[in-house]
Length: 154
Image 1 (cartoon, rainbow, N blue to C red):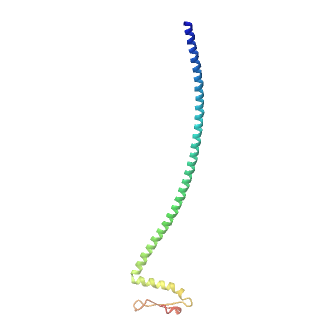
Image 2: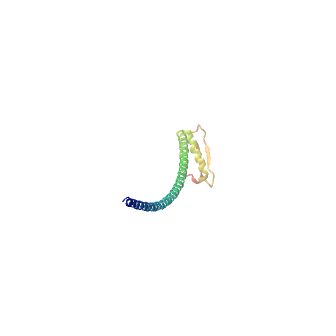
């Protein structure tokens, strides 16, 4: 009976050893499969990340280029606005000067006379215009002019 008991224990031990070896083989296969799957997954994720990084880099480059172009256009527009503002300020100063000239009778008369003298040579091309100045004490216009071609205009 002890011998049979020993044989049964030995048979169980052999069965357990065989089952353990089988389990170790299966575990090794499973570890191998998981290892290859993990490598495939790692490669797929790496490829996707590389693709996304490339697209993201390209998009950032395009956006940067677009931003620089827009800033250059904005700078051009601001330069045009600055020029226009300077022109407006200059014109405003000239309007103030003209207003000051026109508010005083003497300076208004001198201004009108100088404009007339400047425009007369163009109007009277065949013969020059004659200007006569009156004395400050005399009555009447300060300047008397005669343009043979345009006597009916004055």
